[in-house]
Image (tube, rainbow, N blue to C red; front, side):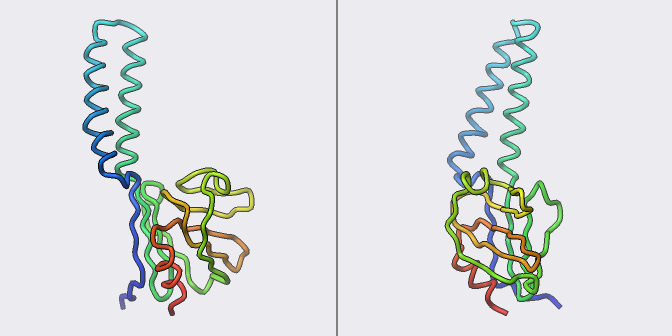
Length: 160
């Protein structure tokens, strides 16, 4: 039996499609053009340019494909931060003892965006912004989920 989805959200690495177009369709051709211009240069300069171009393309692909998927059902929270999680992670609502709708400092509290851990074993899954839902588990561990719709996310967790 399929359970009803109470909340669903997908956050992409490049949320701004204008920025995506600039990165992919302007910066990449510029790097390729520069590499062709540098073919006259032999040796180390050419290797450095090739490495820079490869790094740029890999970085573009990473930011195009990274995404955080969150889904709340009646029994659990499902989440996946692709490409770090190839399968969906699940968290039973029975494990939760406390939830909070929070505004947090991603750099000051967690050291940035993505999957973050602190020295106590707490985790944060966030893509951008500073709003989310903090879940405290029976084990005492905290999981912070960044969200662009934190109120809906919070309300969905409360529903049984």
